[in-house]
Length: 169
Image (tube, rainbow, N blue to C red; front, side, top):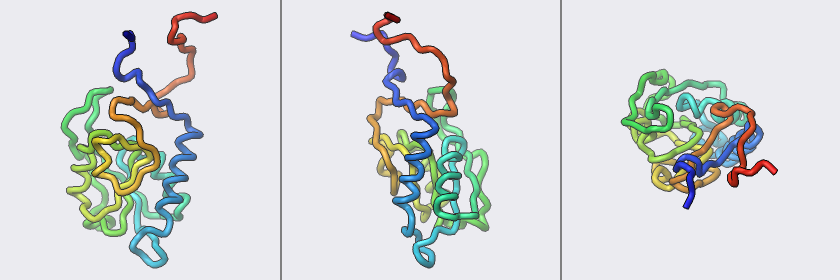
């Protein structure tokens, strides 16, 4: 028996790891777009988690047109019904043809269902994917179990952590 909470089955991602994984995703997406020479016309980051990987992917693939879609579906670690609170420029993204939609993680897929209604032809890519959400994603790098909580670097601070055994010696 364990005293750990469900969210403590954690996967801690450092800035270095996120950067490596986002670059790996960019490498996978390179040349896969519908444009000339497989180019993509734009990147749309799902805020807030998708902003860092989207920036890295846009840089690696030399995509200058970058926008955001803001979907609120979490309050702390509790997921609720997703709501679009900021849409990307409709003239830029249209139906999503040639657009890369980037997020850090797909969990249940509910956020991406909402995003796909706005941009049905977009290519959705996430750095990390959980089994329930994988059907909503075209490309991803790392799969984690559904019951794993991913701790991203923007959510963490460096501090002492007590060992699992409770013993410091």
